[in-house]
Image 1 (tube, helix red, strand yellow):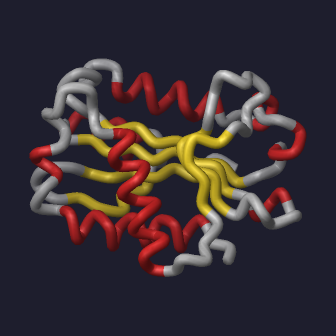
Image 2 (cartoon, one colour):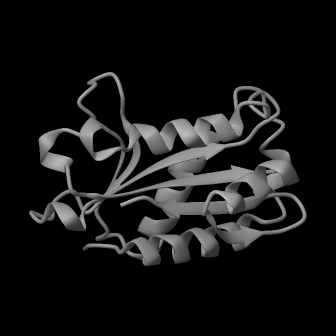
Length: 160
Protein backbone atom coordinates (compact mmCIF):
# COMPACT_ATOMS: atom_id res chain seq x y z
CA UNK A 1 0.00 0.00 0.00
CA UNK A 2 1.16 3.53 -0.73
CA UNK A 3 1.68 6.20 1.88
CA UNK A 4 1.59 9.95 1.26
CA UNK A 5 4.11 12.48 2.53
CA UNK A 6 1.51 13.87 4.95
CA UNK A 7 0.64 10.39 6.21
CA UNK A 8 4.34 9.76 6.85
CA UNK A 9 4.57 12.99 8.86
CA UNK A 10 1.47 12.05 10.86
CA UNK A 11 2.85 8.61 11.68
CA UNK A 12 6.15 10.16 12.79
CA UNK A 13 4.18 12.41 15.16
CA UNK A 14 2.31 9.39 16.56
CA UNK A 15 5.57 7.46 16.99
CA UNK A 16 7.22 10.41 18.77
CA UNK A 17 4.27 10.87 21.11
CA UNK A 18 4.69 7.26 22.21
CA UNK A 19 8.44 7.65 22.78
CA UNK A 20 8.47 11.18 24.19
CA UNK A 21 9.67 10.27 27.69
CA UNK A 22 12.60 8.25 26.32
CA UNK A 23 14.24 10.62 23.83
CA UNK A 24 16.49 12.19 26.48
CA UNK A 25 18.26 8.84 26.79
CA UNK A 26 18.98 8.47 23.06
CA UNK A 27 20.87 11.57 21.96
CA UNK A 28 23.69 11.16 24.53
CA UNK A 29 24.49 7.66 23.20
CA UNK A 30 27.97 7.27 21.77
CA UNK A 31 27.71 6.34 18.12
CA UNK A 32 24.45 8.22 17.67
CA UNK A 33 20.91 6.97 17.30
CA UNK A 34 20.05 7.43 13.65
CA UNK A 35 20.10 3.74 12.68
CA UNK A 36 17.88 2.92 15.66
CA UNK A 37 15.46 5.68 14.65
CA UNK A 38 15.34 4.39 11.06
CA UNK A 39 14.32 0.94 12.25
CA UNK A 40 11.98 2.21 14.99
CA UNK A 41 10.01 4.51 12.72
CA UNK A 42 9.79 1.87 9.98
CA UNK A 43 8.59 -0.74 12.49
CA UNK A 44 6.03 1.68 13.91
CA UNK A 45 4.67 2.46 10.45
CA UNK A 46 4.44 -1.25 9.60
CA UNK A 47 2.70 -1.92 12.93
CA UNK A 48 -0.01 0.49 11.81
CA UNK A 49 -0.31 -1.06 8.34
CA UNK A 50 1.89 -3.99 7.35
CA UNK A 51 1.11 -3.47 3.66
CA UNK A 52 2.95 -0.13 3.45
CA UNK A 53 5.91 -0.40 1.08
CA UNK A 54 8.96 0.86 3.02
CA UNK A 55 12.64 0.20 2.40
CA UNK A 56 15.67 1.25 4.44
CA UNK A 57 19.13 2.11 3.12
CA UNK A 58 18.02 1.78 -0.52
CA UNK A 59 20.16 2.66 -3.53
CA UNK A 60 18.48 5.56 -5.34
CA UNK A 61 21.55 7.71 -5.95
CA UNK A 62 23.81 7.73 -8.99
CA UNK A 63 26.67 7.33 -6.51
CA UNK A 64 26.29 3.64 -5.66
CA UNK A 65 28.02 4.17 -2.30
CA UNK A 66 25.11 6.31 -1.09
CA UNK A 67 21.79 5.02 0.22
CA UNK A 68 18.59 6.83 1.15
CA UNK A 69 17.41 6.29 4.71
CA UNK A 70 13.80 5.49 3.78
CA UNK A 71 12.11 4.84 0.46
CA UNK A 72 8.34 4.53 0.38
CA UNK A 73 6.12 3.20 -2.42
CA UNK A 74 8.98 1.70 -4.43
CA UNK A 75 6.67 -0.89 -6.01
CA UNK A 76 4.43 1.83 -7.42
CA UNK A 77 5.22 2.18 -11.14
CA UNK A 78 4.54 5.94 -11.01
CA UNK A 79 7.82 7.56 -9.96
CA UNK A 80 6.00 10.62 -8.61
CA UNK A 81 4.38 8.43 -5.94
CA UNK A 82 7.73 7.23 -4.57
CA UNK A 83 8.99 9.11 -1.49
CA UNK A 84 12.67 9.27 -0.51
CA UNK A 85 13.47 10.58 2.98
CA UNK A 86 16.86 11.30 4.52
CA UNK A 87 17.15 11.36 8.32
CA UNK A 88 19.49 13.18 10.68
CA UNK A 89 19.45 12.76 14.46
CA UNK A 90 21.39 15.23 16.54
CA UNK A 91 23.63 13.64 19.16
CA UNK A 92 26.37 14.86 21.46
CA UNK A 93 28.90 13.67 18.88
CA UNK A 94 27.44 15.58 15.90
CA UNK A 95 25.93 18.53 17.75
CA UNK A 96 28.21 21.05 16.02
CA UNK A 97 27.69 19.65 12.51
CA UNK A 98 24.03 18.61 12.70
CA UNK A 99 22.58 21.49 10.70
CA UNK A 100 25.36 21.15 8.11
CA UNK A 101 24.33 17.49 7.83
CA UNK A 102 20.71 18.48 7.19
CA UNK A 103 21.81 20.91 4.47
CA UNK A 104 24.06 18.22 2.95
CA UNK A 105 21.14 15.77 2.87
CA UNK A 106 19.00 18.37 1.12
CA UNK A 107 21.72 18.77 -1.53
CA UNK A 108 22.18 15.01 -1.80
CA UNK A 109 18.48 14.62 -2.64
CA UNK A 110 18.71 16.94 -5.66
CA UNK A 111 16.94 15.24 -8.56
CA UNK A 112 20.12 15.33 -10.66
CA UNK A 113 21.83 13.08 -8.07
CA UNK A 114 19.17 10.38 -8.35
CA UNK A 115 19.24 7.38 -10.65
CA UNK A 116 16.99 7.88 -13.68
CA UNK A 117 14.39 5.48 -12.25
CA UNK A 118 13.95 7.77 -9.22
CA UNK A 119 14.14 11.19 -10.85
CA UNK A 120 10.78 12.84 -10.25
CA UNK A 121 10.14 11.11 -6.92
CA UNK A 122 9.09 13.08 -3.87
CA UNK A 123 11.97 13.88 -1.51
CA UNK A 124 12.37 15.19 1.99
CA UNK A 125 14.62 15.46 5.01
CA UNK A 126 13.69 14.71 8.61
CA UNK A 127 15.76 16.10 11.47
CA UNK A 128 15.58 15.38 15.18
CA UNK A 129 17.28 18.03 17.31
CA UNK A 130 17.80 18.48 21.03
CA UNK A 131 19.44 21.91 21.03
CA UNK A 132 17.23 24.98 20.60
CA UNK A 133 19.67 26.53 18.11
CA UNK A 134 19.30 23.49 15.84
CA UNK A 135 15.52 23.57 16.20
CA UNK A 136 15.52 27.27 15.34
CA UNK A 137 17.70 26.54 12.29
CA UNK A 138 15.21 23.93 11.09
CA UNK A 139 12.30 26.33 11.46
CA UNK A 140 14.22 29.12 9.70
CA UNK A 141 14.92 26.71 6.83
CA UNK A 142 11.30 25.66 6.24
CA UNK A 143 11.20 22.46 8.27
CA UNK A 144 7.74 21.84 9.67
CA UNK A 145 7.89 20.79 13.31
CA UNK A 146 5.75 17.68 13.64
CA UNK A 147 6.74 17.04 17.26
CA UNK A 148 8.28 19.05 20.07
CA UNK A 149 8.66 18.44 23.78
CA UNK A 150 11.11 19.59 26.45
CA UNK A 151 13.82 17.26 25.11
CA UNK A 152 13.64 17.18 21.30
CA UNK A 153 12.02 18.57 18.19
CA UNK A 154 11.30 16.73 14.95
CA UNK A 155 11.20 18.73 11.75
CA UNK A 156 10.37 17.51 8.25
CA UNK A 157 11.07 19.42 5.06
CA UNK A 158 9.49 18.38 1.77
CA UNK A 159 11.87 19.19 -1.06
CA UNK A 160 10.11 17.85 -4.16
